[in-house]
Image 1 (tube, helix red, strand yellow):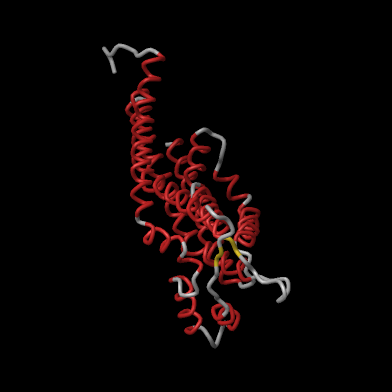
Image 2: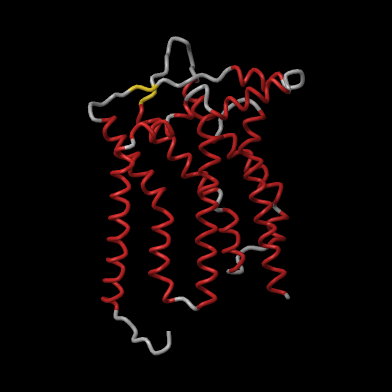
Length: 270
């Protein structure tokens, strides 16, 4: 602001350190709280591996409704099985507990972290830039959380059910370690959270003049094929229903991105 004395590099560095200390303190405190809520924490994390998970129950209800028309869906719904986990290391369960508590603490504290970081950079922005940046940060956070929810309720249960119960031979039983399940769980949440940032990324590229709506429309078919391939890899099941659960929302994101880029171009021409 006019009349303010510019800060030196070391003063900015000192401000950054104070902001980082706040973040560390909050995340550490939340990690302890989440760690103490072990039963609640793992009732959430381990729920998608169970055959009575809400998504599987919904699929069974849907399968019963469309039974005369979609036998493949009925067969898929009847094949859901709970995944049994094992522990292979002396300290593995304790380390998994700590790691999971930290991840959830980061997730819970993410609005505060974004607010603190934005507070640090906002004085260097003009009023219009600050408004755009705040909208961008908020939109990015919302889209990431939506992607994580889609992963939790759709991708994780179907992927875990398929891979955890897949056998090359009946003589080779599956013994899935707890840490393997946890790693897969958070990886899928992270991947879908990043995928759902597509509209935000498209807006940024269009704002920089690197992306056009005409380009996205021209390669719509290519994008559709790529989305189907990615959906088939992420959810390696054999039925079209599960594939659609993943590919349709992502393709809707692509179309929404086309709309956003088109509106931005019209606004720039006006």
